[in-house]
Length: 287
Length: 280
Image 1 (cartoon, rainbow over the protein chains, first blue to last red):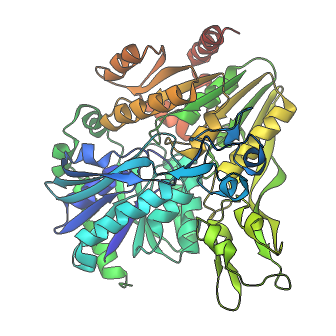
Image 2: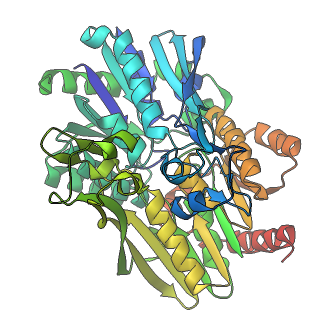
Image 3: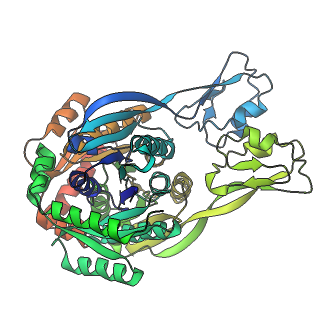
């Protein structure tokens, strides 16, 4: 097992909680938090920053004084990023594609490098953690995820240590970037209609990428009917349910007030984490 | 009026709040589920309903008769979506952002932009005066923004009295697209360490978008640093929803909590408050 990703589809199902437990129950892991828009794992594991690096996003267009106000740039921009009687670039809308520069008759358009986020290297009691913070409004989510993964793999010396990846919610670009090339995925689900619906999407995504995966049900006891429905979907799809964590208000309170990692150390979730590692390490062939 | 319901942290309760506002709204209301790679709002109202149109994006198609293999398209594409080789041009449509740059750059007009489906819209009418619009990004597709744009276009065309936009989590481009143009944004926050951190990012985004906002504190337990953040940013606290197993169980079944005792009235009052904040 070189790289294990923890995903869910549904936000708030417990990816970060399960990732923390997995990190705490295995020696020699490098942890990657790929939820670059809302990273939380460093808070849960009480990480200490060792380095912060600027992450540069796509260049953004800038219109200079050579502009003859012909308006061609605004006509070709498909993102609504150029407007005004005197053309001006809305950098939040600009995708950095360069189409405007292609048609500018006076070479008035240049591209400026901009910092889109920050990559953070840190240490926790349970291993090194790489995470990132994408600046609000930026569009380079998938690329920043790829950068976090690349750095984590480098720290893991490309296979010597295991890379454990906390994924983002959803099933689009940032999740796809999280799953590409991993050995296996743990899909975390909670017994709600929303989480069941989103789990199906993520399982379909995992199948699309031909990834080995298994499911862990968090917050068991919240809704028995939906828990059975989750089990049915898994059974029909040939997916194993490899962990169950009971709904626990105390754990949530620790998540609010701090001390979550300490509480988890003597919590049944650690048994589930050990079982999950056993499953993936014994059951899944390394790629 | 257009109300966006957002909040950086996944699972903080955006759909819970959006669905409840839609449940109590009077007049012609659309609930627009912009979380297109994990749509859930329709689960609160009996399903997605009828399929509407596909959402398509433009991707390059190379006419090999006109192509001279000059390589210009590959030089201008910043996304690796079109790659000229020695004897042919490869395209990677899933990487294409549909900027049209390759077609503009091609000296022989060999590149045509053709439509490629990336998702679909669905429309349901669960009760009188309520429409639920769901957008679904096809599993495996990368970009949510085109589907959200299509949904917003339909809303502008149909022009309901009130549209409630259930936004995706996070703060990147799909969230920006969903919130942009809204009259007001309800930011849902949870009091966890992560939730506080994510609320601050969301407030930064809303300031950049110049959309007025208010906060709903969900799963409220213990002391609330979230309230201090609200005071510091000068945004109103619209509602506190307690951390309550009964609320969690009710919502797990897809029931909007506005149907629980007393909550309908509270969400109704929140709508009135929002209208006052917006001056409508």
